[in-house]
Image 1: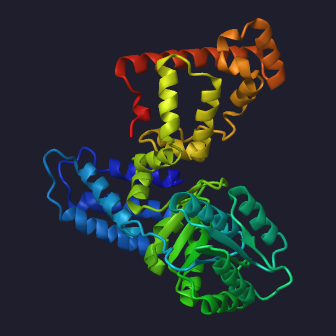
Image 2 (image 1 turned 90 degrees about the horizontal axis):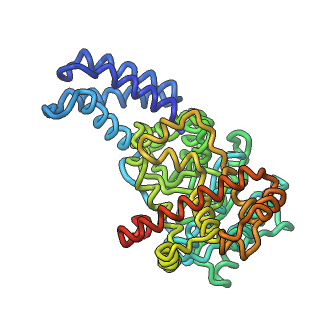
Image 3 (image 1 turned 180 degrees about the vertical axis):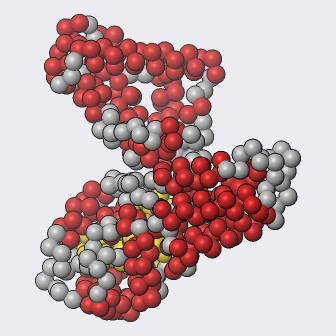
Length: 438
């Protein structure tokens, strides 16, 4: 995400390195390169032009501290303007109502159905909501079944009426059903098309008029670049939606949609999707995204994701086991599961300052733990609890059972033992592991 833009901006700032002060000449040269970088990232031309003009005005108006280099000043100005361009601050979703109704809109293939499931899962787990998913796409044959599968994954019921072909009637029935069954949140998944057409617009406008939702979200595939911004404008002109959802930000996206959409439709980006997993959803924070674009990482979001998986009782139990040097393969499996729930591994790495750039060309497979898990699952319960039992014959059996080699099994056992010793020593010396602190 934003890798090319980050590199181009970094090269632009190098123009100012070694300069004694900020001047109109060197700023103009830098910003010319910045504007090209933004246009290459598929940012709207008017947006890119206005952005560079704003940066120039701010940069020339700043008093440069003697402790700062002109390039550092420019990075700060660009960072602040990037955050402002994307909305300045996080805007929350409106979930007030009895029930609160959220209407999803967007083109076919943008990820509406998957995001509906992610949103229901997030609001259920984080805010204690009792959601109901509603299938109002009566055209795409697999849409209803897809929503049912997602609902089953997250244990959220799905309302569907396959005999009814009028989406307005389905939405109205669903809201009545929600009221009767104690659901305080209704998320309506609507039909999309391959392109904006009058039939689709009339249909979703009719649903909006009939149910008067608390929130209308426009879901857009961020990989479509400038086309996403144009589509957003057309939807907003008809629906006056409340916020934007950017999906597929974990892909090879140039970032133009994220940087342009707010300035074109004047509506906040509220969420981003960063993968296929139901947990791969983040609230959108413009200042954090600006950090990531400029290669500064996003340690706050990383900590938030970790805390979502944090279990205080489990941490205390683990701390006691580590102190007694009893950390075993069952505990190791549990820690792997928590890491996997945090999301795409390459996306997680990019949140660590400096790591994202270093790992640009490194392919981090989300199945990176597959071999390790296979080895552990091939152990008996007794062997997982007491790794010292793993003699040569047992290791051979485990290698065959896991489809790995004896060398891989030996390597894992050595790494596990080294890690266990390090954790035990740290626990003894420090009293408490930093990762266990609140």
